[in-house]
Image (tube, rainbow, N blue to C red; front, side, top):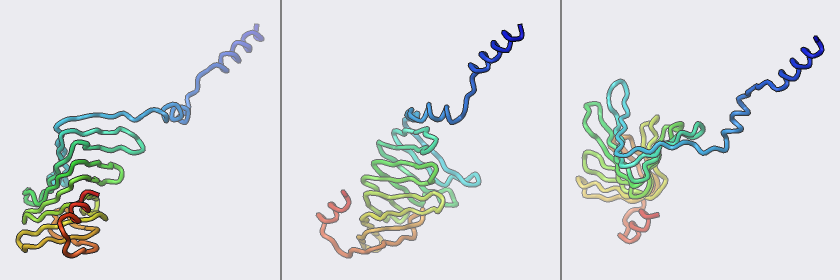
Length: 187
């Protein structure tokens, strides 16, 4: 009798189920990350209960990937940067944007236009907003129009604070003809 009990116990324990996290990860690693799709999106970013930034767009795809979570705005984005008084200090429009959550940055591309309250305008094909450093920058061609000064500047590479009140062009290109400007902005 004890022989049979030992044999049955041995058989049952050999078929018992033990789940390891690495087994689960191996099973799910080949699966595509889930995507949430939202329309007419408005996201507010605040610090100490004060709204700092408002991001809005017609469509947002949120990728729920553990390794690379991100929000994509494939149909364009509008971003407003607020000052300490709650007034809009600068705003940005672009045809495409992606927010990389882990890197705390937003990359905007295609017809990127950044304005400030002086109606100064930056045009470029790509602009990156570093949320932690509170700065915007690019290594691409830029054109900055300053109506109050009657000036337009061209160059490659740009860095500015969030409200676009202090900025620097890395490599100034001086005067350019309109066809060259158009070609550079469309790269």
